[in-house]
Image (cartoon, rainbow, N blue to C red; front, top):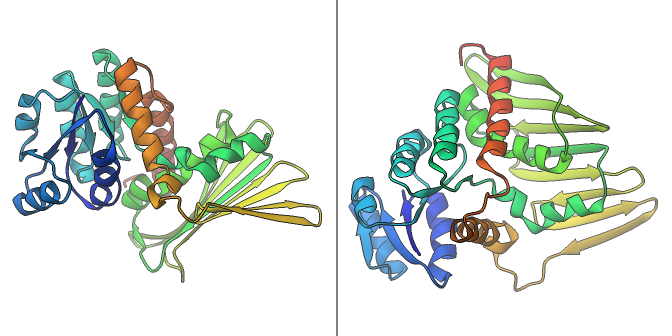
Length: 302
C-alpha cells in the first residue's frame, strides 16, 4: 500500500512520521511545498519518494493520504484527494468552516472512499478503558493551557474540539442539549465551560487558556466509583476510602500512550478491508456541529 503524508508540520513530525515510518507493508510518499522540510524529513526517515504538490502526489498513485497540513488547507486537499479516488485521514478539524466540513463529509460518502478524522484521544488506552468501567453519570474534562487566549473560532474549532469529541465518546449516548458559558474579552476568548446533556449523563468540558498551567484531566464517575485520568497516562480509581493508581510500564512509547499507533493502524486497516472507521466521518461531523453551535452561542458573527 502506498500512503502519502501531506504537510509536514509539528504533528506530522512528532506523531505521524515516526509511527508510519515504522509500519511494515506500506510505502510512504512525503508531500510539502517547503523544500528544506521535505528533504530533512525524507533523509531522517529514509523515505525515497517526495513531492511538493498534491497533484504530484496524485500522480504517484497513492492509495491513501494523511492530511497534516495547516487547517486552512484541509478542505482543498481533502476535496482534491477524494475526487481522485484517494482515501483520506484528516487531522482535526476537517475545516474551520462548517459548510466546508459538511461538503467533505458528503463527498466522502458519495465517493465511497474511507475518510476519517484524527481524534486520537478515542484511541488513548487510559481514555478508551474508561468505557469499560460502566455507564457514567457525570464526566468532567479540563484541558487548560498556559497564557494562550485566542479568537473564538480558533479556540473552539482547532483546540476545544478535542474536549467535545472526547466527552461525546465517553458519554456513549446522544447529546440532547448544549449549554455554554465563557469569559470573552473583546474578540479574545479566555476560558470556556460547556455542559452536554444526555440520557442519565451530564458531561462538562472546561478550557482555560489564560491560566497558570497546561494540563489535561478527565474525571469519570459511575456512581460509587470515580476514575481520574491525568495527562492521559495515569488513572486513579476512587471507591469509598480505597484509592488505586495505574500507570503505563516504563517501556511503553509515548506515541502508544497517546493513541497514535492505534489510530494510524485503524485507518490503514479500514482502507485495506474497505471498512467504515470508528469514528466514522459522519460521527465526527456531529462533533464539528456541536463546536459550531458553541461558536455561535458565544459570538454569532465569529
